[in-house]
Amino acid sequence: MRVLLFTGKGGVGKTTAAAATALRCADAGLRTMVLSTDPAHSLGDAFDLELGSIGVPVAERLWGQQLDAQQRMEESWGEIQAYLMDVFDWAGVDAIEAEELAVFPGLDEVFSLADIKTHATSDQWDVLVVDCAPTAETIRLLSLPDILSWYMERIFPVGRRVNKVLSPVLARMTSLPVARDNVFAASQRFYERLDGVREILTDAEVTSVRLVVNPERMVIAEARRTYTYVSLFGYRVDAVIANRLLPEAVNDPWFDQWKRLHAGHLVAIEEGFAPLPVLRAELAADELVGLEALRAFGEGLYAGRDAASRLHRGEPPRVRREGVRREGVRRDNGDGGYVVSFDLPFVGHDDIEVGRRGDELLVRVGPHRRAMVLPDSLRRRRVREATLRDGRLDVMFDSVPSG
Image 1 (cartoon, one colour):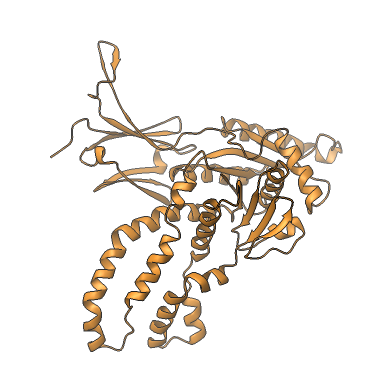
Image 2 (tube, rainbow, N blue to C red; image 1 turned 45 degrees about the horizontal axis):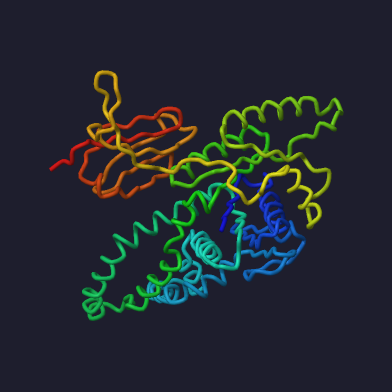
């Protein structure tokens, strides 16, 4: 099973790249599902077909689906939404406003994760291609498994126990609707639909992220930030797609400056994202709509490559035992402690914070933070230092447990 996630700044052509990749996989004989998690769906437009929340056949061995958040909410969020609407009604909130407030921001991403897990664990497909939302929403999507896991493991059980103790008291003191156990049970079932999705998405043999960029300074800068943030959460990028490059056949002098700019930006992409492979796609002479246009685009993009294969083997966050140097010889005898390493490309010392809280290692890059649960071997060891060098963060732990 392979899962390919396509993301990029809005308008760079990620939907075209995802659709063409899915079609190429299907043409290669692989049972393929292409799924759009972008609220502003355009996947159906790319195929020139009507897609819905249930997968429909697009071509031989290829099916397509566009997430319907409203339908997923009714299926998965009904009991929770009903309770929240009772609370808002008690507070005097208008019924229509209460219905809107009962749908939390970010639920689209949660439902998307549930659909990804369903397809990835099904025996129906060999490849799942995901046309993600623009980069900010994608980063939120990929950070959700960590956040939900942290909440369900630490806060949810406490809240459920407290509710059982306090709800009889509150029922006698106030008319405020109190969450019954069925509401907590619904939340538990909702989370269980997502349980294991992080393991799927961070398994480098299964899942790869592909970044789509145009030869524009702001687009490249955003792609660099995206690469950093997805690496922070343990996801592996295996390729960059440089889309809408001016063809060599364009020789009108008016385009000379644009061609020079594109050439410079392409060099920046290839050097900046190295050693990732950079797949090139020229600016099309016509709209890329329909199977034949997408098939031609995919053929040019992959140029003989297997679209479903792992195009680059990056390394996930890992723990290793450090040796010590004695008389100039490095000895891996355990005296040197442990190191947790992260690949964090394009990040500077001023952009990163490292901390420790209980059994978690906290790493913050810009506005995003990852709480990595430490293995048992490190939980009683003190963080000695952290170094950032050549896009790799190394956090060193003492060799001897404290206390």
